[in-house]
Image (cartoon, rainbow, N blue to C red; front, side, top):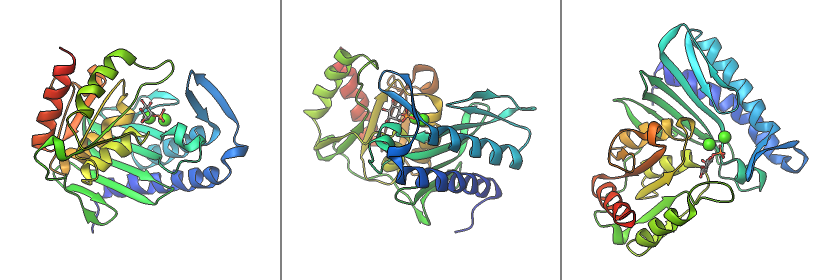
Length: 264
Ligand code: IPD
Ligand code: CA
Ligand code: CA
């Protein structure tokens, strides 16, 4: 599979940072861990990976800006191009030795993702997408699952936890979705959740309280795999509302309706 120069830059950066994360994952007990907030850990590996990504992406495209989870915004001369980067999505999994975490890199042009890479160094699964060019897992082209009825579907989600999210409202949503689907999963990495929708592993996904670096690459990935992605109101204000709902045409619609019912 021939990748564009742009995707090559992103893949090279993700693989380089991923080598460091994989090494650190092997020694997870020895990591220096600092507390960022309740239930929200930031590891030394996280910061190191972000440093590698910053260096690689800056070197390849010096004029582009960056929005990075740990170090914030690094402005560039080109106001239209911004890398949106989560160096370690699934930090809690990483710290607990659960091999589901990823580096997520998107390139946004005027606020819209046009290229995305999601790389899990523990499984060596590399998801890539470019606007108009489709979505891939390693060299295999991806297509969202074809199921038409939510009762047959596995739906991914993010469950709020200590200090995060509106637990009552979420439980109302979960009650509706769990009563109308074949199974619920909570993997602990929003980037991988979306990549898994693109890969047809999950039929749908919804979550609240996500940031651009959690979802930007995955949003494009699902769309390029033929899926639908909106915020919880069915609009494209994913970054503004910090909500996301994804699936194929049918499941996306049913999931939106089910969530709307929960919200009254
Ligand atoms: C988290 C993961 C998780 C989601 C959280 C995110 P982090 O990102 O994506 O699945 O439920 O809301 O904050 O903290 O591991 O980068
Ligand atoms: Ca994240
Ligand atoms: Ca992170």
